[in-house]
Image (tube, rainbow over all chains, first blue to last red; front, side, top):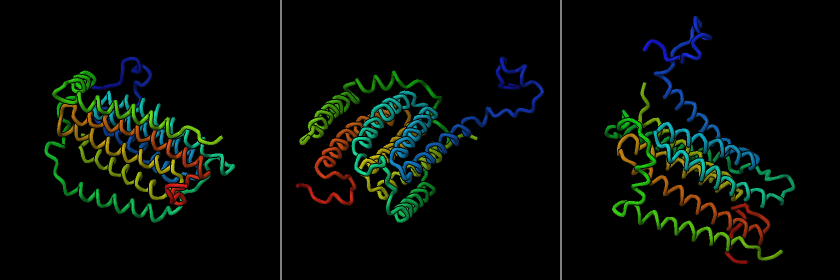
Length: 191
Length: 102
């Protein structure tokens, strides 16, 4: 393979010194997504306004979905966007807006105890990184086999009585119960 | 270069620690919930990464889907509790809510 530049673009880029980045593409994508995830998570942790934190959380969810896609987990990536961004984040924003009328300025609340918390988090990360450094995972240098579509295997695994059918049904009952319970809890007691 | 499992695990560890920082540093209960969601995402990322690199099959992905469903249930119940507390106390600062009744 001499060049991976698409034939459509070829006339425009002929003669330009464009490096062929194709072999590095997974690493570059990973670096971009990991940067997005970590920066937006840090903003979500420390932004003074909680609405900004929710917005940063959305960017973080999209970044994690991108990492899932990079790992070849297409269905989980889609479910991540649908459930987290479409469901949980909307719930969180509702919670922020419904409880924000107190201070006049919407959800303006700087995090307190920032430095002890950051110190604790840094120590935990140090411990985890050291543990990771000292661990051996067999076969972890390369992905196990090529990336294949996962929707059909996941569907079969979820509906196979020998595998995950019972947990799957249980979790749907749990979700129903939790949502009914949430609606019951959140009903207005006083006007 | 090819990506190794450690890179994903390191990102997941960092995400988990940022979630811990959020839970520890914030006083607003909704922000604490945001931290919990960050930690759940980190755990899910670990599941999917191990699934891709070691275990094979879709076991880790199925597990992460279960975590996803439980996270949705947990967020709904937690927000209902937060709204109820706000209704009776007019505040949701987690260090000022110190009694179950009243």
